[in-house]
Image (cartoon, rainbow, N blue to C red; front, side):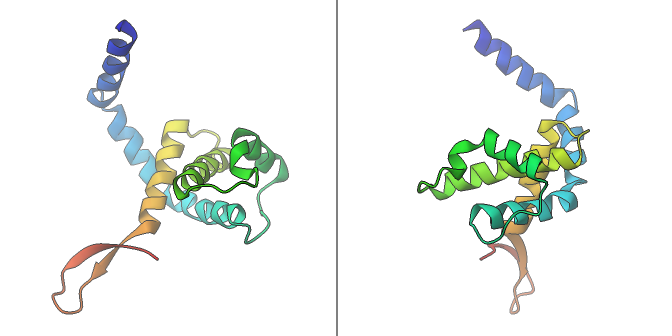
Length: 133
């Protein structure tokens, strides 16, 4: 039970120290770098195109996420989780100074930016969120 309290304390310290805010701000600055990587990973995973990524980097992605490329049927959540993980690895390969935390957050923010786009209502002029097709 002591390990649980220590874990909770570490999480609490992460947020109270200001590090979480700094990591979020840093990650937000890399959304532009992460966005095309998400598209590349999505194209490769769905089999639409061969990868333009360096073969050695892509081999390491496949080694880290072997079940994603095993040919079996995957749920949408499994594919999304694997794709976000692969995009994180590729972003870190491109920007090696990024921590895993910041790279993962940048990819998630970029994915969210692609998935949920503000939509302006023609009748009311109000902005709402809608899921992109």
